[in-house]
Amino acid sequence: QVQLVESGGGLVQAGGSLRLSCAASGLTFRRYTMGWFRQVPGKEREFVTRIEWSGGTSYADSVKGRFTISRDNAKNTVYLQMSSLKPEDTAVYYCAARRWDSMKYDYWGQGTQVTVSS
Image 1 (cartoon, one colour):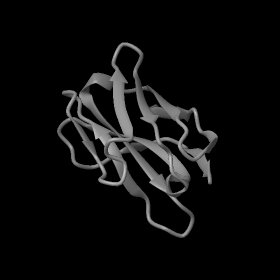
Image 2 (cartoon, one colour; image 1 turned 90 degrees about the vertical axis):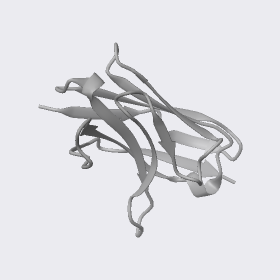
Image 3 (cartoon, rainbow, N blue to C red; image 1 turned 135 degrees about the horizontal axis):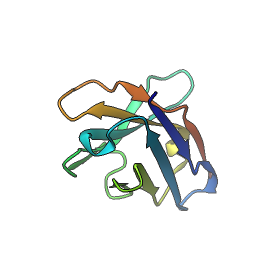
């Protein structure tokens, strides 16, 4: 079955950096668009960024210029490099996958906590 496993979360001071990883298995990774979402307790899950199966990227305005998404199809892994972190970036970060021809994310990871202290 499909599994998405995030890693790399943790506690960091404001202005610092973290790199999240999401290792995928059970799917043809190169045919999937991969996304990162985040959620704060009591709020809806929000889109952060995605990288298309073709390599195109899209970012939420709140993270543009600070976050970078990338993928390594040989390792079935997608990365999220986060820099200039702010306390408002504190959230559980989720990795998600959708087929190249779909608009719906069918698979989700379990999430990894990112906490940015001021």
